[in-house]
Length: 490
Image 1 (cartoon, rainbow, N blue to C red):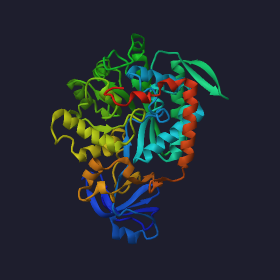
Image 2 (image 1 turned 90 degrees about the vertical axis):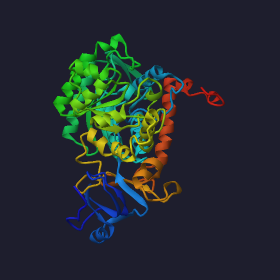
Image 3 (image 1 turned 120 degrees about the vertical axis):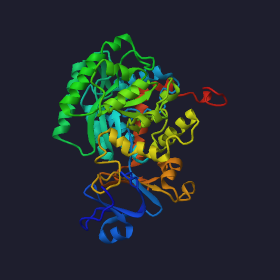
Image 4 (image 1 turned 180 degrees about the horizontal axis):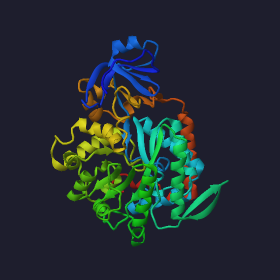
């Protein structure tokens, strides 16, 4: 696909006269260029004057002094974390994971997941993220009932965001207790492993019958579960489930022709490969990849597995080891980026691009590592490649789906406008995103959400936060403000 003249004179929308960072195979940056959108796809990319005349009747967004580029993709979103920002910040890694797992499993209801999914989508859209992956709850995976994933999918789609939801069992052992709320009253039920797998089957089948253009699914596990010094929640009781959950994951992947996602660190990649769990391959995304061996890199190269790198994740300062990002790139392993947020930092993928660059340069004391173009590739086309969607998304080319953002260059910190890729990676943040288009639909214009009452969402978020904090007795885990001032450690 390349810069082309339109095949007809009709378009729904014209992003007019901007600087287009195409992320196409030639990585072209085009000035004085417009992008025409028709029926959810890019109809044409070409000189502004030509497309202005050709699509004279199209609705226009003026993109002078703006960058037009693909929307960013977050390979580690966090359905379940947006309403609970900073909860348990006073705890260590293991205790905090256990707190979140208990909260999501025992104190949330259908209304909570509705608000959570909307907030999760809107905060990312406003930061230029048009597609994300997320497990259904992460540390408190809610696949115990099909209602929770279905509500989350519906509300994310309604907000206008593209998402891949990871379905699979929560961390063992099984059966696990889950709490269901009706009229403010809880009912606790023990849920078996096979019931959760049946629920995943049902969601996959329902989606096949009633597809949503913005939502798809894959199989996901929180972790492999083998003994691993990098795994803060490993126990012998959990390890006995490794084979069974891997077998179930492989069954779901094959039965529904979907990919796989999991956390990987320490010796887990080597273990999964050596034990022939069937989880390595070109449709698998391994998250974090910190503290791994040179052999792990070779395994990922040989199997075609992808890395999701999260340079600002809490794990980077809680556990040993770094993600060998330059080594992955040099070995030919595809790497995308993810925020792994928002519980203890924000979801701004522009900051993740910067962090990916700086962490490796600081570690190796080499200012040439991870140039800005590579960082932008990881946040766009390489992230979509990890999802198997790069043929449809991740670059500005005629025929591809129209998931696009514009970035406002008319600001002091973005001037002078002479090196747009450098400006986007080094100087921009998500707050500089002006307009967002997903599947050809304008979902944010001039930083205002379209078709979404943000004030109402904020009010409902505050009410839901208060409800769950009271239910779960989490007030004691709100960080003590008196301990954050005047000292080197809280």
